[in-house]
Image 1 (cartoon, helix red, strand yellow):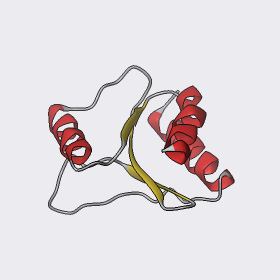
Image 2: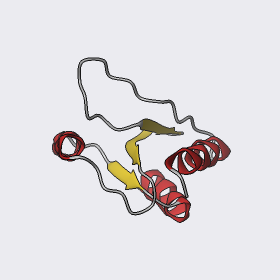
Image 3: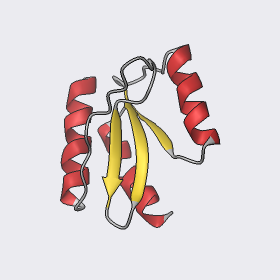
Image 4: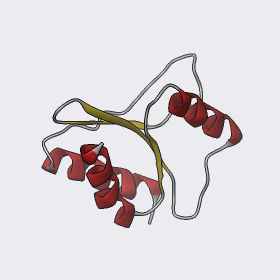
Length: 93
């Protein structure tokens, strides 16, 4: 499945749970994740979308680690089947 298709499914799934999933744009700060996952009750996470089997570039991986050190959840999603479990995890933490 293509990255764009996975991204669309993520946006739809988050919306179905009452949240929003805006594109995250950070001018001058390359390597940040593609999307914010904002769910009811103040639940927030970052999502990096990839085509199936693709991995984050080194700069992206470094940014993900930085965000994790700050206490944020960061998910790399490369299959639509991951989405439901990820949303459940975000809601339960």
